[in-house]
Image (cartoon, rainbow, N blue to C red):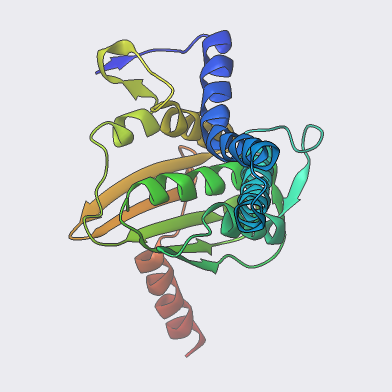
Length: 238
């Protein structure tokens, strides 16, 4: 494991490759459909070609809208994003017969970087269930203290061996390719907005979590601490 900083130009190039990978398939299908329209005179075949063009255009549009929020600027510095928009583009991006999305994040305006983290965790969750399944997205806390949990449950759910390492900003053998850039980029954005990432897996379940980083010297009440404080207050009142 080697700690390293990826050159900004390499980061930009790898992210561009990642986006192109998402849209090249539907765009290629549109081209194929247009070629059929040019060559075919049979009405039935032309109908199939038009259906292919329409569905592929919708898919390409959905993927570009998702990538705009997950990777792009999506507004000026410090801009907020509506989590309702984030849910919409995620549902469109993951739309297929194999995957179900359960979205439990309340609608609100949220820091664009935190939305980026959430969307990228959804993509990582989707890759963890190659045969489909259920992706559940929830949040806890609010404002600067908000955190997320994204669970991927499905047959043969698995976590790629290097995802945890990449999320922490490390890379095996000191190198990253276009396939690995998703997790590394997610870790970079999480660090920039004060979130700490963790991932765990068990039988047919992979769990990604993003929690607010606790500054040294600050008191942070965990669930057990909060319960203890509540009992103390009640005793004092009694």
